[in-house]
Length: 243
Image 1 (cartoon, rainbow, N blue to C red):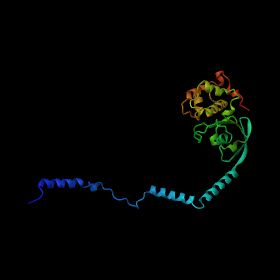
Image 2 (tube, helix red, strand yellow; image 1 turned 180 degrees about the vertical axis):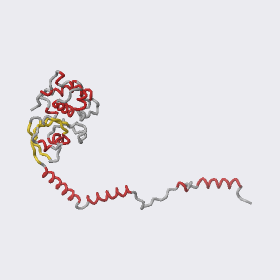
Image 3 (cartoon, rainbow, N blue to C red; image 1 turned 90 degrees about the horizontal axis):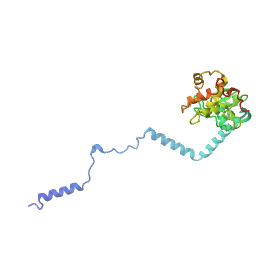
Image 4 (cartoon, rainbow, N blue to C red; image 1 turned 60 degrees about the vertical axis):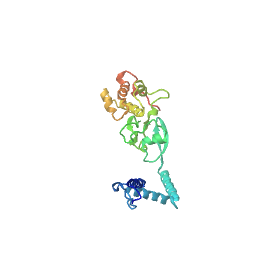
């Protein structure tokens, strides 16, 4: 005779089934990672780390210091002092022969009104006047202009009196953010000195090398037109530059 009823045996089986942990389906089991399976990115990261550790090891600090000293020595030997006549004053400027006029103005002479925009001669923010002609200062070397008369935005005003073109830009609100404005004004002064612009379309065409990302072009044209000889206003061509 069986000591347990059928009902008791069924309850016992249910208890044992509930106590066993659930086994995941073989379809979802993740294979163990392969220690030799290394991606290209991981390899490069480990190689860079190993190189850094090697440099920082014995003698690495001395090697880096020696390279820095050699670099400083090369830079010192490449420096030359030139004279530039800027805004009516003769200035001695120690520069590397590869220094652009823009970098010499901003980094060596603290004339930061001339702006660095694209640094590729495409935006016109770095425009200055050299012997009365407008040029992109980022595309010319400073050493090429030791005998030239250079005028930046800082040299247009006479003391507290603004140059007529500067005053016209303020009157006609020819700017918004103002970053391109120094180049726009210098270019406008050079444009009128060239005496080729007659109509508004002429102004637009001949100022096309100076970009304004804020889109203040109609007001810029109005400011330039206000200073054209035919306007009856102060002739910007007769306004002496600061000496």
